[in-house]
Length: 229
Image (tube, rainbow, N blue to C red; front, top):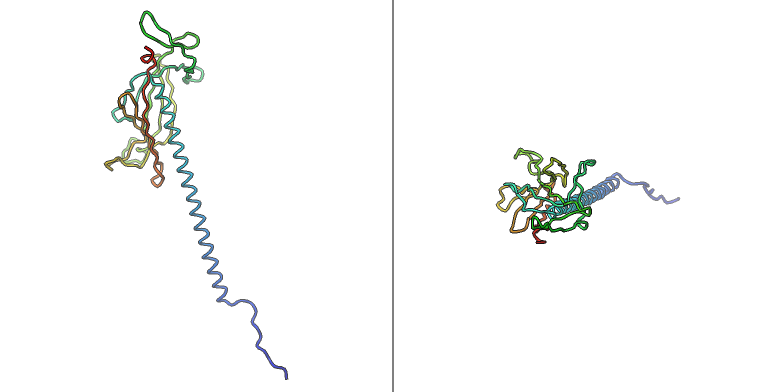
């Protein structure tokens, strides 16, 4: 008589399938959450880097114009715009833009009749003085609108003959930062006069959850005519 042995069951049970499925779903969920977190971190880092780059690039454009200043700047009441004279610009009627005459080609000459120095270009033509306005133009006039706290930085160069052209130095400059009193948001760009210097303040934070950036610099005014006398 042959002994009988219980037959081994092959395959997996329903309980094992449920456990394996649960583990798989948990691992998949954790992986997706981690990937989303890394993606969000990368996007935030890219946005912060772009904002920082925009802030410094915009500031350098404004600062470059101010360093060419030829007169005492006139500020608006809000400090969000100024006008200043510039030396060494020539109007190009073909491009409808102003060409900058390279300072290394300037020649300083003395006018005996007037008893003062002036500058000429390499052809002996006196360099003209033009007016320049730099303004932070708000995107909205409604204080209740979010666009009211953002604006474009516009530069306009013009002369007494009616020649004029404007260019945009930066777009959508603004911030969610509040002033020291915590009562209102800071402007994206504003100027101050301190002695013989122009203080430029630029604030940039395009989203409330982004890192705010602020650039502040003191630009000393120069007047080549006064310095040369």
